[in-house]
Length: 259
View (cartoon, rainbow, N blue to C red):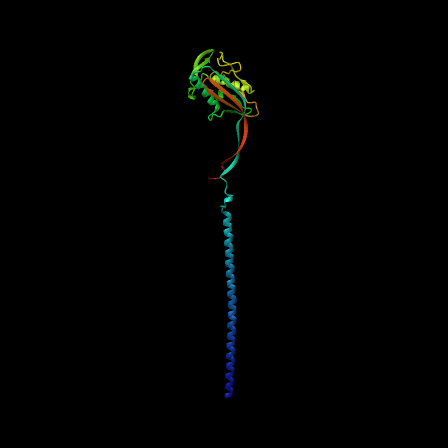
């Protein structure tokens, strides 16, 4: 009996050992499987996170592409440079003076007003471009009180009279003479009565807005001319200059830039 019990006990121990061994082996297998599963899960999560990060980068790049660049090098310049052609006085072509021994204050005023109109607002002289014509009646026009002309002696229908603008014909005659001296052709009429201030080298010209008597000429030169009138009491001087072309580069606002 004792020997039989010993054998039974031995079998029980063996079975217990085997059972424990199986439990340990199964536990190890389960741990190994769990570790692999965790690694797979971690890899999946990492993959998902990487995909999200890549997608975020792509979206950021797309936004940067859509947004206008703020780089200073691409900012439009509010200014641009243009070529500007100007003209300045060159060679003196002619200078002519007609003087009257005595002239009334009103007459002197009329000559000065007519000269100022020809010289322009900036008093730089009248510029006549090639091929263009000058007309006294268009430039000076009617000698009205509103323009500053005063009453002075005039010649009307072969008679001496008083009227606004008396004395401007001396300016017209001086201008006519200077243009002829510059070798340009003019169209002008003489007074119906002799003028005391006209000399043998002068070319008389009478002008009248009411009767349409005009002094006109055309610039047949290939360059512009500048006509400058100066008056001093009873004396009138007209100078004709050749104009020189000058090109300058100037800085102007760029209208293409939105402000």
